[in-house]
Amino acid sequence: MTAPEEKILVRVRLFAHMARDAGESQFALEIPTNTRAGDIPECIRRRYPNVRWPKQTLIAVNQAYAPA
Image 1 (cartoon, rainbow, N blue to C red):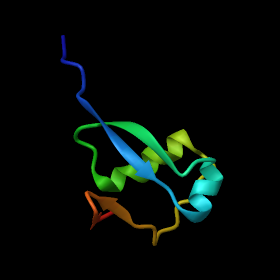
Image 2 (image 1 turned 90 degrees about the horizontal axis):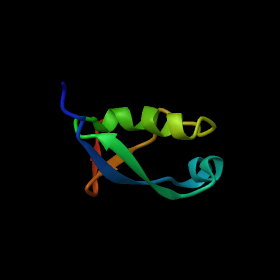
Image 3 (image 1 turned 90 degrees about the vertical axis):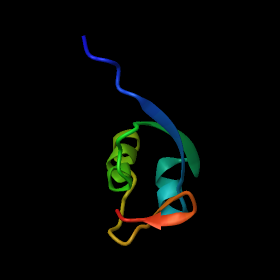
């Protein structure tokens, strides 16, 4: 039997057209603990398929920009 995958709860904040397309500007997202910042766009797209994610969009982790 394998152990259940550990998860963390992160706060996501969207701005401008992304918030409009999602219908909200912030929400909690449960992700596996081994998720990289660059994986977050796909997690958001699964929850909000209408949100467009331009290449130049930045991701911040603990108030510092992270590689996407």
